[in-house]
Image (cartoon, rainbow, N blue to C red; front, top):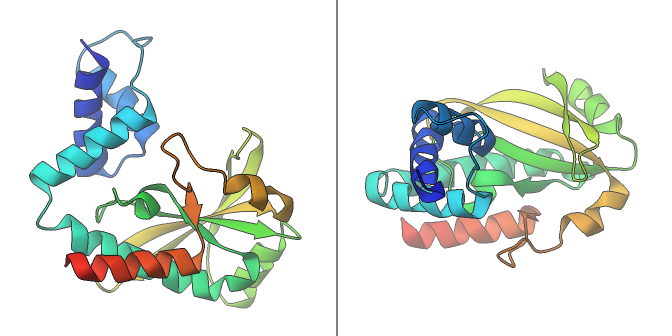
Length: 197
């Protein structure tokens, strides 16, 4: 079984079930009956497979769903402007569907300031720890918000980083793209999405 075959199954799982890519790859290995230590496709290979799957099976619905998620992300970025929000993940890269969550990286002088800001605004959230840029644990504040354009609740995850991490966070990825964007960049994507719809 080739990595590209694993990527194709993982892409279907990621799109159809809204799974993150790591769990989707592991589920694909299990679904295909392969040994747990089977070498997995890289994220670039999986991203290509996800884009191909979307183009084949979701081309009529995905652009509007992506635009709705980017609009909700922009709303949260405006609300959280004090914490220098940057959009990342599938909503940023354009591979999101209605099942995808929104990931915002916040760059704060004080790591607790975002929590205090949400409490002051009456926003309910759950806190958990996730790996940061270098694998170090960072807080993730998870919110469920109603996306009116989709007519359903969407997970919005705020990953809290130190302000000093911002410069390194904007280095291009393996495909020479910025791995995240600020509100201005997201608004530019929304304007470009308008031309597609």
